[in-house]
Image (cartoon, rainbow, N blue to C red; front, side, top):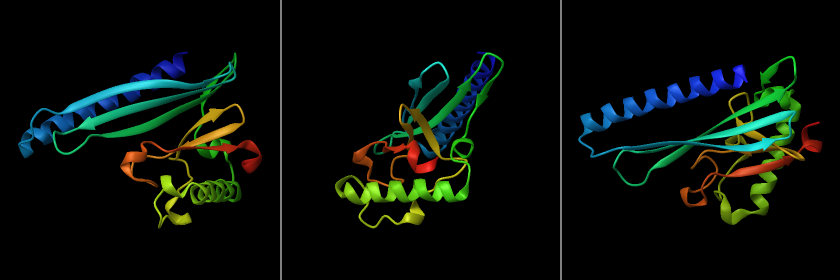
Length: 165
């Protein structure tokens, strides 16, 4: 619990400093009231692994707001709780390429939800890639506009463990 609480506290502090920065920038630019909302959702918890998604919604008073998603994933043991990044789960470049190819093929099968001109190279699978655990593997989380139009929301594509194991 100490590890998770420490990480959550640091993440929330970062969100608050981002809010203060945006508030100052909006004031300088002459925008009206800004909106900044922070929420989270536990996406997976089987007692051995835990995944939390953090949502930071920001609107500076211009067109529409934007939500950024970050993930916190842990392996839970009695001795130690350890945060896992995607490269801890999908360990080799070859396996990350398989995950990227799987996601790319998924987007081609569901064309109406993704950019028509999306290229494999647009799909980044690395240390900074957001994800969460599922019963059958992982789900890769993309930011708005990253691989699809805004109206699609936050794309989350499930990848079976057999793809990267």
